[in-house]
Structure formats: C-alpha cells, structure tokens
Image (tube, rainbow, N blue to C red):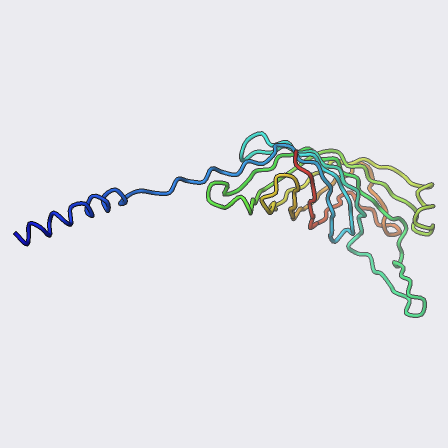
Length: 214
C-alpha cells in the first residue's frame, strides 16, 4: 500500500515534467529595418581626406543597391612633404598640381552571416563601378584661387570593400567600410609631380558612414 501511495503521489509530477521536456522558447523574429538610407561618408586614407554622400535601397534581406558620390584628394606615392620648422608651413618638393577625384559609383552590397549574427552587427561586402571626374589645379597658387585654373579629365573606376553597420536604431545608420578604389584615365594622365604622369589612381580608404533610414 505504501508503494502504491507513493506512485500515485508521483504521477502528477511526472506529467508536469513531461510537458516541459522538449519545449523551446519561440524564436525572436528577425529585426526589420527601413529599406531606404541616405547619408554621408567621411573618408580617411593614403590619398588624403574626403567627403561623400550615398543613397541605398534594400531589395532583399541580403542584397542592397546603392549609388554614391565622393570628393577626395589624390596624392602621388612619390610625393615628399617638407615642413618649415620656423613658420610651421609645409610644401611638397617638385609638385606641379593638386589632384582631386570625384567618383560616381553604382553598386551592390551583400550582407554576410545574416542568419547567424545578431542584427546589432551587420557585416557586408560591397562593390561599385562608374565614371570618375579627375580635377587638377596648379600647386603654386593658393588652394581656392587655383580652381580658376582647374583642368578636368575623365576616368572609369570603382571600388571593392568590406564593412559593417552597427546598432538597432530604425532611424539612424552608423557604419564603417574599408574600400580599395581604382580609377584609370585613357589620356596621358595627370601630373602631380613635374614630368611624372599617372594614368592609374589607386587608393585605400577607411570610410565612416552616417545616415538616416526611412
């Protein structure tokens, strides 16, 4: 009788435990972000400092199309800058022109590991191609007044990069992108240094992305 009573007392607990075994908490639905983003790029690299703007459109969870426009200086890797210790000014030996790049790129961004990483970190690969305006201004004139003597050249170019967007905000975008830019001119090239023409203008940039999602 004692054994029977113990079994009867344990039966309700066995059923309670049986109901709990195998039960899983429901999966949290994936974060949904607004499909459109507009913003600005702050570019830092071996070619100098640059600014840009971009517009993105999300087509699927992993594929986003974009167009971006930037302005940055392009320096010849052979340039040697000298700093005057008495006046605190600097100048570049044998430099003839300042050169600026204005690339317009159309491209695709592919999100990586979207099913295995939290939405707080959204890494991606991206690449873009398009025309590039190459502007040269005489180095022996003051920076802004030199644009009165500016010359324009045209190139084709693009970039490939890897980056990530951060945070769970549905309004503001913060991201960082490492890019390698290439641009090729079809004429004789541009003359940063006296007598030294460049047809291929290649630079690496770290780009900070700041935008608004809508």
